[in-house]
Structure formats: structure tokens, C-alpha cells
Length: 413
Ligand code: GTR
Image (cartoon, rainbow, N blue to C red):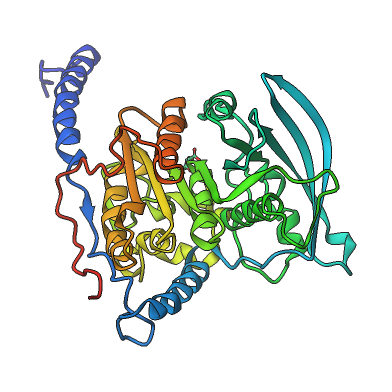
């Protein structure tokens, strides 16, 4: 039998492959462009005003009841439960550094004593308190995490120059953050009956920082506390620490302004309005990634968002009537900037109901993932305007996506 002369050599295969690749790239580019403004809409955003008994909130007192129900839902199905304050906190000044021009950096050790009768459960974490020139009282920014790590630019000088106290704390001393590794850190060891994940632990840590800054009765700080204006206490954080800042600020009303930066999935982003290539519950709860940030129940919603009874506007609404500014970046697709606009809009009826619509704010800058000096300026511009009554130029209510989100409720009349 004669064999055919027609043979496709490797060279031809390579050429065809290359050609297919050249055609695929612009096609994918076009698809990508189209999808960026076409989020996946899983279902409409649940009405935060519906009480567990099925009736709808109609008074402020009922909203306060509903607030507690929402807190319980979020702890039960997402972050796990957070304990109350510890029995005691001992604060030790480790060092004091003169930063010049009247600015000082104090490094402190916070010793948490969960239970006076169980000293073996005590643990420590580090706090950095940077003081501006002057005597105060000062507006104060608490930032989750050390100064200037990862995609966060250092901001200390900028913050102090504008007359704010700048406090950072080492959240990973409370619970380590090692991708794919659920380590039982000192907080979880001290409170063994709680089901909290790392984000809950870190948020609880931010609340302990507030205990110190506000000189609560269970705090012993022999060297005194900084002159913080309690009506101007701001909590912020970037990305996973933005999720943390939002949780801490939503649950703890001592924070007067809450500023999650590019906090995305399980932060100010949506589970139900999923921008193209944004992080999903399945992504974030994968055992090889960040399952340990949450409690076990949350993983039930991986790939099953349709059954989730809430979205992150529930968390955002808890901040009302206080101030929230979520800061987003239009090219930070993984953090779901479209979904954050949906969550902002979905929380608006709650702020309206409490007569504080102007306290619900959102800002978009161009660019990618990071906590930049531009972001810190945005944060302080908003704080200057809302907390210090300064006249400031800037748009803090940006809705760059022209999309009708499925929000089918409005504030009770
Ligand atoms: C990512 C994670 C995000 C965000 C980010 C960060 O890998 O998927 O949810 O938290 O890390 O913290 O920088």
C-alpha cells in the first residue's frame, strides 16, 4: 500500500499554533473589554431591613434590633464569633524615638490578659503610636498592620504633617497569616470556644487598640495615653487588612470613621455582583489559600452564592449612621470594584433611613492594587471635611459604573 505524500511537519504545526495565538489575543482582549462592564449578577441584593421574624424595620429602635441580628448572621456564617473585651490590658512603652519637628514615635507592647485567673493565656502584640507636633486632642488613624509593608506605601510623615495621630499594630502577632496554613495563634488559643477566623481575630485586635487609645477602665498604661479625640477615631487597612478594618469598624461603634481600602471579597466588595476576574468565595476559601480567615460555615457558600442570605452591604450598613469611605482602584479587578459600587448603593437606604446619607462614601482612583499616598490623602481629605469641618475639594460619592444593580428595596418611610 502506498502512503500519502501529505505530511504536516512540526514547523507547520508551530506556525499554525502561533497564528491561532495571534488571533486569540485580540479576541480575548475584546471579550475582556466587554466583560469588564458586564458583571455576573447572581441574584438581587437582600433587603437588610427584614427582621428574622419576617417583618420589616419601621423605627430606629427596630433597626437597632436588626443590627444585632445582622451581627449574629455575619459571625455565624462568615467571620466566626468575636469575644468581648479581655479582663485586662497592660501597656508597656518599649522605646520612644524623636522624629524631629515635634513628632514622636512610641513603640509599645500590649499585653492582653483574657482572664485574670488564667495567666498562661496572656499574649502580647506590638503597637506603634506616632504623635504629631502639638498637644491635641488629635484626630487619630488606626491602621491594621505594620507601617509600609507589601503593597502599602509608608504614610507616617504624611499623616503626622496633617496633624493626625498615626497608630499601626502588628496584627499577625495575634494570628499568623501564612497562605494555606491554619495556625492556631495566641488569641484562638486563649479563647478556645470561639469559632473565629483570622479576620475576626485581627478585627478584635483593632478593638483592643481602641481600648488603649480611649483609656478604657480595663487598660493599665502607666506612661499615659496619647491625646486622642474620641469623636475622631478612624480605622483603616488595605486589602485583607481592609476587610479587617471594615469588620472592626462595623462592629465597634467607638470607631467614628471606617475606611477599607481595596478590601474586595469579604470586605466592601460583593459576593452577588461579581465583576469579571474578581475573587469569589470559592477562591478565597480554598484550603490552599485563605480558608483560615473565616469560620467553617462560610465555605458552604463557595460556588453556592445563590444561597447566601446576605451580602456585604449588611456589614457596611452596620457602620451607619457613622462615617464610611470605601476606597477602590478601577484596575484592581481582583478586588471587584464594580461589586463595591453595588454594595455602596445597597447600603445607602440604611444611611438614608438614619438621615446620614452623606456619611456613606466611596472613592475610586485609577490604577492597581495598593495603599498609596494618594489614598491616604483621599482618606484625610474626607476626614478633614466630615470630622474637622474643613472645606475640601473632592468627590467622595463616585459611581463610575453605569449599571442598574438589582436593589429592589428602599428605606422604610
Ligand atoms: C489576595 C487575596 C485578597 C486580598 C489580597 C491582599 O491574595 O485574594 O482577598 O486580601 O490578597 O491582602 O493583598
